[in-house]
Image (cartoon, rainbow over all chains, first blue to last red; front, side, top):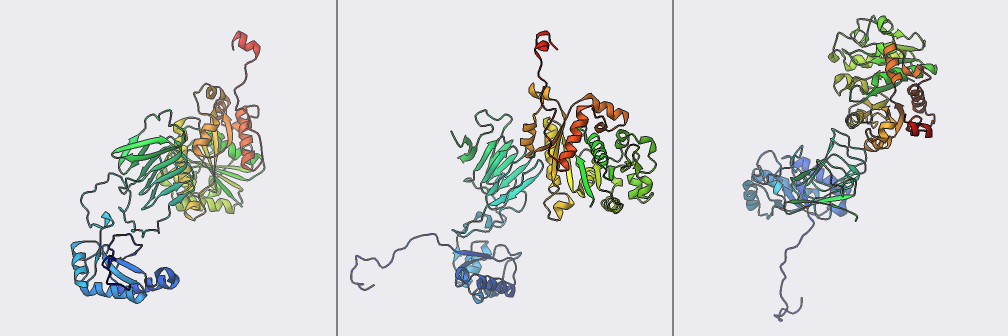
Length: 251
Length: 270
């Protein structure tokens, strides 16, 4: 701007904000293959990916990288047409790597990236890989897992890292699990476990409530008898502190 | 084109074999060439209900193990010449069944020009029940109007949708029909049994037939005559209706209302 003379106008304005940034989770130490994959992405959607700022996540590699190998991966990303701007937070080794490469570390936006994370023992019995959910860039939410068939007794349905929407009945003895919220546009007679990865904001909604058990982020309630004012009604469940709340959706 | 229909339920004692016998007989009455196979190896019953127990020489397991030919093992029904029974072995167990063997027998029956193959499943969800449903084109799920039977049928419906050849090949599972048996309208009205709507709602499927609970079923079983042949009985007529619906005909449900007591009976008691 023109007037450096006026001290009333500050030279800069420092704020923390949220910026949409893509996360490249590297699964193998193979720079040529990484180049191929990303170049293909850029070619298919140049508006989205050409010169897009990306964070490189090295926390999912089977072993720690040497500096030059990491530099090769960064070069592959650059050659593909994206701009690596940081490494994703990870182990001590990643910190050292970022230091020596002169790149910032983008803070831990996912506790799940802690290798062998101690603590955070979410009681939820997520059946398979714990929170391997990719960190979705803001504005690019993972779509819910949509299931239109009845979930029968003995069946188990798991929506990993996203919401679960079921447009059919969930039978007694069936189990529906989601890292996000669960919506059942039918009757819920089985077990519903939302926030299986620990998300306390997750909720459970259903159109006709007969559940055997509902759980959010490990806090659960079982129902030997469904209270009369809830039985068969449209209901939502959520957490208030440690307390699992259940209420009718319509009055 | 051969159609393979499995009669299954999960729970035991709900009327699978009775239904298999009447279904096979009813299809044969319409002139179709039908084979009915007892998958309950070790607890063979179908031959009794079909009234051919004294004519069993070779059985299903013999054919699977190639100890007898299919023709040797098929027992022709005394009453309908297009109806054939393949009995289970009483001396073996379910492990004697193999998927390849079952597939070979079904293919051989198709090559022989059978229109329908009715697979009478054992109870449970183990190997015998699994193999009975695996190759099916359609399923008839037999359910009684009580909660444990309904839950077991729900489990079976889930398996039909996921653990069958049709499911594995991406055809979306085996289409299933619900047959409600041992239905007693008086007890439903008294609140001692689930009603038709309750069962349909829990399982998310409409019923293809409702067979009333009646002593004629037990009598027919003991005499080795499929109850569908007892044309005077409500159960027999209800089976005929259900088969007609399976074949695409429209028939109103019968025998599902409790009889109204007349004035005389109300005054003097029943």
